[in-house]
Length: 129
Image 1 (cartoon, one colour):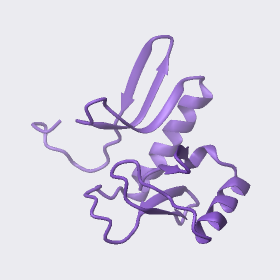
Image 2 (cartoon, helix red, strand yellow):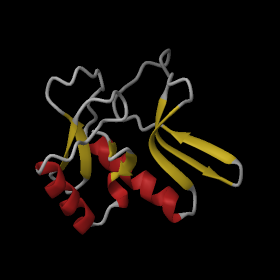
Image 3 (cartoon, helix red, strand yellow):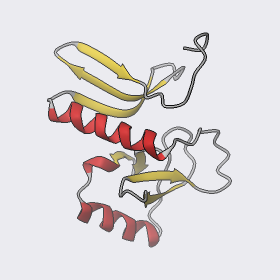
Image 4 (cartoon, helix red, strand yellow):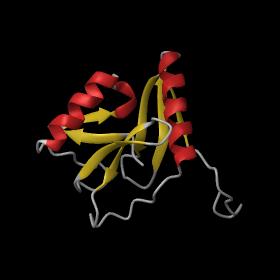
């Protein structure tokens, strides 16, 4: 469940929006404002998780092979994003490498230091790690 989308040609990060901004954006989307998923350019939509986390999702049959994230993964990603920002790091969610060979869950930059965070909840073989 991505925290980012492209709206009116600009990247939008859901945790950066106030409740009012989110409601206004949702109303504009219901009236036809396109939401574009940055991973593939497919259409998307807005929603809140059961715990209230705002995020975007792909329209049905979008053709994107984006792997769905668990609600826990989404919540940890949002918390990590907020923590990094609160500590004055320039912070991005779902940040792609220049060649798009990887996309970090959270990417933070400060004083020339760069940190890419990948949240892993499920088991992963050591060979893949």
